[in-house]
Length: 225
Ligand SMILES: Nc1ncnc2c1ncn2[C@@H]1O[C@H](COP(=O)(O)OP(=O)(O)OP(=O)(O)O)[C@@H](O)[C@H]1O
Ligand SMILES: [Mg+2]
Image 1 (cartoon, rainbow, N blue to C red):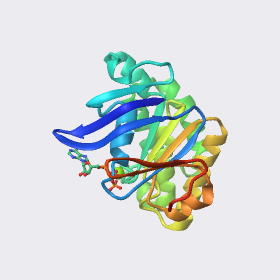
Image 2: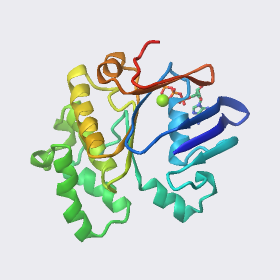
Image 3: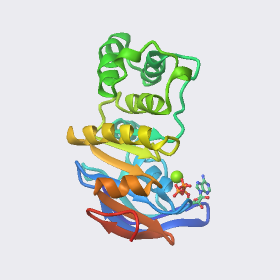
């Protein structure tokens, strides 16, 4: 993916400008910066949800993301799995029901769901808990359901918008172990976070936002300058 002189606005309000960067297949990147610095907006521009007011976002097939038709855009989005801070789960349902629900929403036929369900639950270590109610799970287990749902389409790219933001340090580490493994399997990982210890311990590429732009891009990087 490539951003060329991208500017992002909400209405007339400029959020980020001069974004000129490349995300190569197989990279592991942390997005950091103060609250309101534009991390989520940057993610939305990558996912095809926030059109730049100037500049271009180019996908791995050299297409301008915001010139794709709706069919091409939904195919593009299937290559990206997004994990959120709040797990967005159906609390009174089981682990299995939550993943199946996401597959049904995506229009998967029953046969495909039966095949894919155990695969994604195994990837996040939740197969043995598939009948457990969400409300009985730890925060880390709940977030593993979030990751399982992001894996449904076997995406090339996984984006986490503060995926460990609601977790204690132990659960956060457990979730990062899963992201690490997904990275070793060859996927591109992009994670926004405020967790300095996490960033410092992993020694990955760090892109820092501030003052309406990218103020630092280092590989490997640390949380503080
Ligand atoms: N839908 C929206 N409409 C208008 N302004 C918005 C919208 N979403 C975000 N903003 C504003 O854009 C700026 C960047 O927000 P963004 O959510 O990208 O920051 P962030 O770095 O993700 O912050 P946080 O660490 O709190 O998640 C903020 O000033 C925010 O108030
Ligand atoms: Mg955010």
